[in-house]
Image (tube, rainbow, N blue to C red):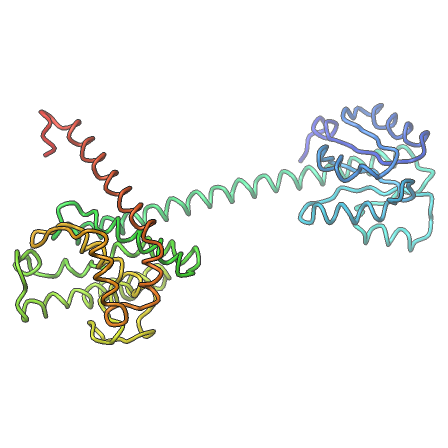
Length: 372
């Protein structure tokens, strides 16, 4: 329940053209202890004043000068505050039921006929104010609960992403000294996906799930995965199984998140001409997320140093990707990737800078400067 003191502190706005009636209403309310009462002689400034004052009760005369009557005023307020509870008490000398009904249909919560009884005025005002304040309190609780739900959802999402990143690192760090490949590659994918016209939600999904593209590598023997040199045909056949294994690890989930993760793991080595693996998919048979990840994965692999090769320059890597446009890669994806290359390079620089900063911090925190 709302306390009497809270009700008496409510904001009340009166719109009444008759000066004596206006003063009488103010006097009735003030003598009963209401402390925050304002009055206007017409409705010409009502919209702006209402938005600023935010009354807990509006006492509104239907017949007003200035070109805006009570019905028009209620229409304007409904347009301005479509989702709000409008605490309107209409007062009029008109006694016909059709006028009363029209006022209630227009948004009024109660109706009083003139001349009015001061006791009825006070009772109606108190009742409407109490309902209004209960509504505001309920909305406050709803907003508080919504905020908590958003915060819990954010925490769950961050936890999920953290688990995904750690799983991605678990696979990536087996054949990479830094594990930064999945950071760069996933950000490249999100940037390219956005440029390809994917929705914000899809871009968020691809950013979160791309780190799992090589999760199947955890099942590949070190003698093959870490081999310092070219793989034999037999070894390469084993290496190719990581796509199917990764998809199998991620399969069975019902969420869009896991479905995209499985999709990327399974298809990021498929080729536009159908000569990729594991399914030999061709053209649009390959999901767009897989086609995007294919380009970004190869670009980062080419521009990164590995035990068996030196890092290529950005120009050399782009030239190689363009060379395989229409065979290994989707031509449209390659064209968009080339167009946003400055953004890709910016991401590459940012991640490398972040990696160096983290390495320096670890070294400073370690005894004798030994990061181990």
